[in-house]
Length: 139
Image (tube, rainbow, N blue to C red; front, side, top):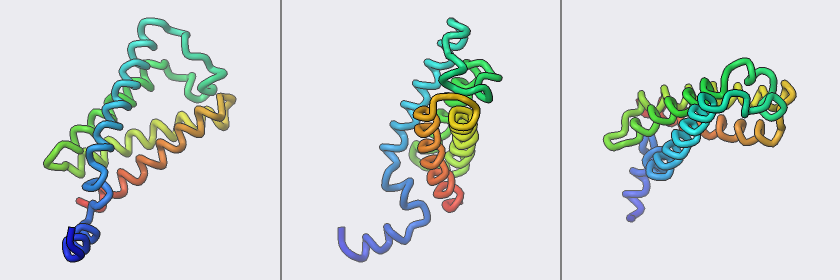
């Protein structure tokens, strides 16, 4: 890549999404799979997810609800990442994931859940903040 091509690439509005699109796509597929497993687990085995792990705030909803939100938002984001990139879909899916991961992190950290799971959820919320920011910037 020449220096002029690099300058054009760095000056593009959605550099993060363009550069990391394949990785972000497969990460969203993984989030979809995890959400689907939580949804299926929440339906087939109610009560298998414990309040001591997820906190009382998250436990107000069934595990199938959290799994469905995770799977649907990851699916929307993944569809937006397929070429041609659809920034509006990426932004909507990422914002849904920010809300879901923030709620899980808050529940785990502040409402009696496992702090380790809360920290992982917080990291994923921050990652999706970056994805949503880049998608909105590209609109």
